[in-house]
Amino acid sequence: MIATKPDEMGDWRRTHYSLEIVSKMEGKKATVFGWVSSVREQGGIVFLIINDKKGTVQITVHKDKAPKLVLEKLKYLREHSSIGVRGMVKSMNKAPHGAEIVPEEIRVLSTALRQPPFSLFGGRIPSIDKRLDIRAIDMRRPKAQAIFKMRHAVLTAIREFLISRDYMEVSTPKIIATATEGGAALFPLLYYDKEAFLAQSPQLYKEQLIMPFEKVFEIGPIFRAEESRTVRHLSEVVSVDVEEAFVSYEDVMKLIEQLIRHLVQALYEKCKEEMKLLERRLTTPSSTFECITYDDALKILDKEGLTVNWGEDLSTQALKALGGVMPKFYFIKDWPTSIKPFYIKPRDDKQDICEAFDFMYGSIELASGGSRVSSKRLLMRRLKEQGLKPKLFEYHLRTFDYGMPPHAGFGLGLDRLMMVLTGQENIREVAMFPRDQFRLTP
Ligand code: AMO
Picture: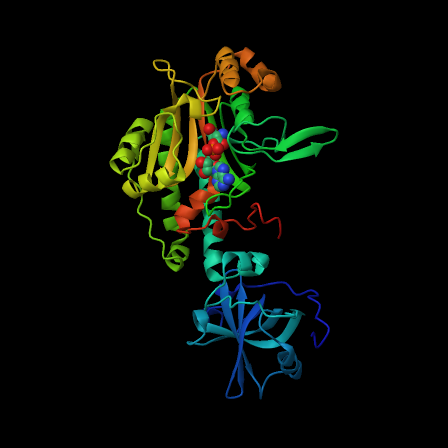
């Protein structure tokens, strides 16, 4: 029940964030906004704690001295309501950051109609499924805040890293005509009177874009109609796609090594507090990651008592076993051509092996990539070998008539990378509004 009409914000604007209310401001006026996270009364003094995006600030109301209107407002204040406070800063040792605000006026902008079904600031939290139902509130928990601040820092650092190396950020269509990633199922949709699909990957477009721009990257959504519900798969994720002309898969693998080192360093610079809160300690990876071939992987698995026949993909069980032996970042390269997509280049000396790699962290595949087929004839043959119709790819193949150079690239799953960097077991913890077979809202 709302006891009174909410106040208008009027001409009030924030003058300071919570963190800026410090003892040096003694005697100055401040206007802060945020959400009430606790109301406590002790010996005729009411302490309000207000949370904003940067932290907390204490508001102290002396009941015998406070303006009547402030006291009136206190009656209706409850946790989670959003309020504005204008008052005088007083230095106070016991308050967060050594200062508090003594309010001259309080505006209650929106009274919380109910309390969240779990405490945001401590105590047991329910399962992810229950939390996702009110995700925008769940994300106010300090640990969720830390995860998404780290995600933001990683996205910023990826852009910094690639742009400083002269890659151009591009945007490609997400409504597309043909599949590129054989195994993963497509989401069909009605595009006027035609069937179209949500993009599984920007693969063909990023390859085309190396013709005009040579070095490109895209950070955007990819869509996969995953059949099974796992802690590592979602139906929509963000992919960091990179593509470059005149390089091979070995070159882009080196780029991934440098990128990951840059990201870990950036997190230590910008997100120390967040990593501490999540109890995440990352060691800066060495400058070269371990790199095994697919054949090596089969040998390791054989030693672990797991037989995988040459030419078979590595099952979840096999990846788990491999992750037990190699728990950190590493590459698996030189895969059988038959289990990699049509656009991956077979090796010149041994056509049944291709210049593909997967980039791993333990048992999690974080990225895959490779050298691409740049010959139109070969690409048509590879399409046919994979049961696809070159005619449907005419719009793509056409580009190859105009001097398509050797090129290589990769797609890195941002959500899986964030699982690793923040130490989360379930991919849903690092996606703001995750989508899976059973979840289309919020
Ligand atoms: P691939 O299909 O391996 O390769 O996808 C690249 C990376 O995207 C992430 N990913 C997913 N993450 C969570 N849930 C999913 N359902 C999901 N699907 C994919 C993974 C994966 O390693 N075109 C190629 C890339 C290239 O060669 O450039 C591609 O899409 O982290």
